[in-house]
Image 1 (cartoon, rainbow, N blue to C red):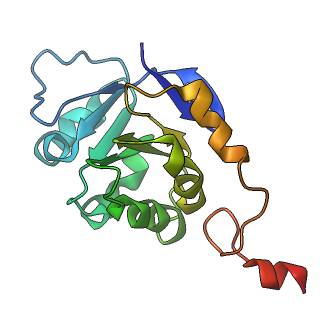
Image 2 (cartoon, helix red, strand yellow):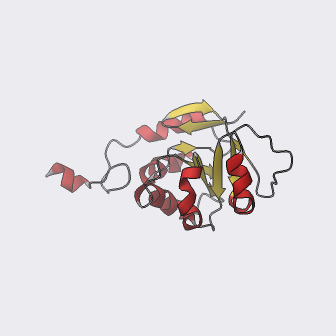
Image 3 (cartoon, one colour):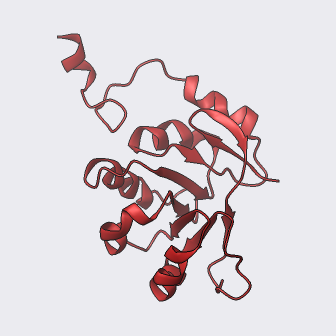
Length: 165
């Protein structure tokens, strides 16, 4: 079973992440599923009618504006990082928290490494599914590596110079 980091704790994963080529065939009516955006586009009414939890995941080239009017339908929005060098979804997480005031879980999935966790948390992520070959217990220490931040962001709206004045 995969373990994730959520709100600063390492937990067993309870959500099922469906692959990009998934369909509704054989999908049970209950259970918590994070579905790819393409499946949501095609079957949104059927997915909302299920009894289980619903989340959606976006690839790096998919825009949050496409589902902005439906954010209340999702308990989880997972943002896929296809490569650790691709940071496009940092902007997406920031938009979710600040422009759209999304209060649900924003999860980083894909090529997620310890070195990125602190900055991902700053822009609005609160859950992290690390790459399978990484240790979540070790990675959680990343949140303690910096005691102060200079720049303003989602987790600290005032820059340091404004807080010191």
